[in-house]
Image 1 (cartoon, rainbow, N blue to C red):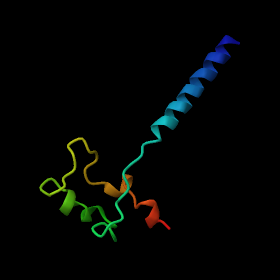
Image 2 (image 1 turned 90 degrees about the vertical axis):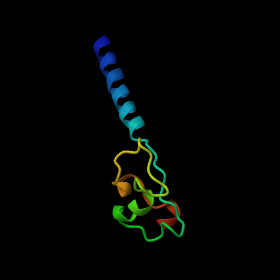
Image 3 (image 1 turned 180 degrees about the vertical axis):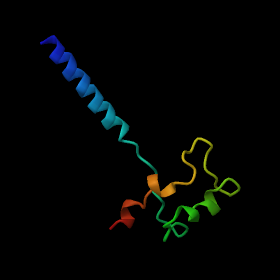
Length: 78
């Protein structure tokens, strides 16, 4: 009986951990004039590249896979 309780506790912990890790929230692409019609990562680098006015932070991974994490804001999806 004790083994079953420990096993169930481990399973619940693993499921809870996986759920917590899936809750990463990313900043949506702004719904402004500069970002309207943005569809490719290559369109991000002129403004957010290393030598631009608004570069990404050094901790920002991966540098040029923008649309994998950032997506259009909810108002754009309607």
